[in-house]
Image 1 (cartoon, rainbow, N blue to C red):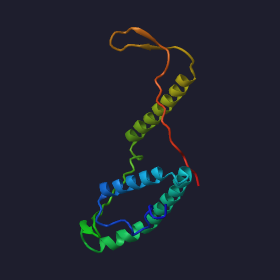
Image 2 (cartoon, rainbow, N blue to C red):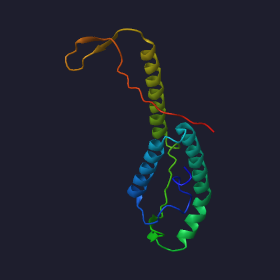
Image 3 (tube, rainbow, N blue to C red):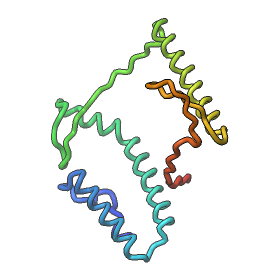
Image 4 (cartoon, rainbow, N blue to C red):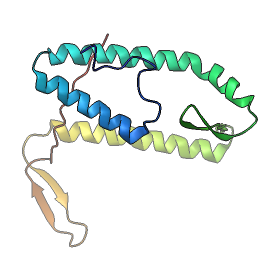
Length: 155
């Protein structure tokens, strides 16, 4: 696997995002098809890399921004990448009485929605519903369910 997982600086700088995604997909298929690896172990190791790289980037972000800002331009090309310096304003509307009331209503409705969902999941058998178009009372036997499978890794 050491020759498949790229170290920082080993990915061709001429590759754009779709090409990098394709390279990663090809490498993943090579790992799977080789049948030489414990895929769960590989997945966990890659999770470690993700944490490592995200932390590295977060620690470098401000310094990279400062270096880029010295250039004096908002948008430019650098080392095979398009760089766009942005700034974002975050507004605090909580001092406005009407906004605060609306925010409280949203929180209250969100809580009521969660309570209703919990109630519906706990109900066995039929659920009574009213057709909005006809006013007809409809008995539904089950809530539609979609099952999404995933894997969670905690290190």
